[in-house]
Length: 114
Length: 110
Image (cartoon, rainbow over all chains, first blue to last red; front, side, top):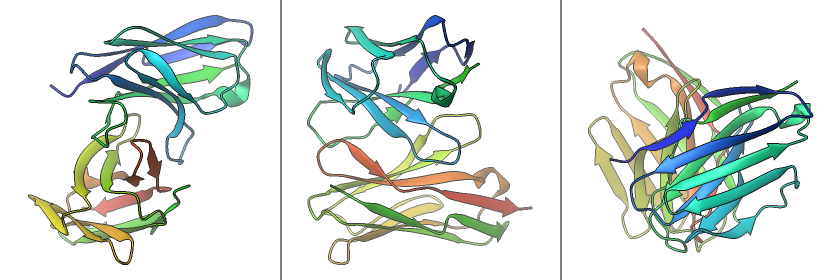
């Protein structure tokens, strides 16, 4: 099973709202990633978690707050977003941090900020 | 850092034809090259990959070739079908963080 699941599939939120995106994998992978993807562009890396610890933050604004409660779950907490944050947010996982390996992506959450 | 160039940005073929997408990379330390297919409204799906110690890999109608000396790799799809229509991304990885190409929109006309 190479499945990464994400909820919700779609999310519409106002600029004053607080919401969370969720990601789950049961492949025993110890590296998990958040990407942002704008239309017709490749995914852009936001955060990397290695063994449940934040290892890479690609200078992402503080209105995005990641959390890794355990080795299977990854959350992205959203607060005071801007319309330009509207995008597809993708979660991915790979087997071992620091090892060059296949990354498996979830289906994404389509976020619209109004 | 790594830089990946992908061409063409759009590729239109007739059903049954072959399609080739090419990528070049800049960092000689990159040693893993996956290809992703992304259909509309979905996440990228890994379809084939190749490591630097291999020159070619094939899986049914898709194949990937790698030329480490020239730093380029290519995706080949034979006998294309309408369901192959999607955006394809190449990536190069040296430090487990991928650098993606800009994507190729493949359109297969029935």
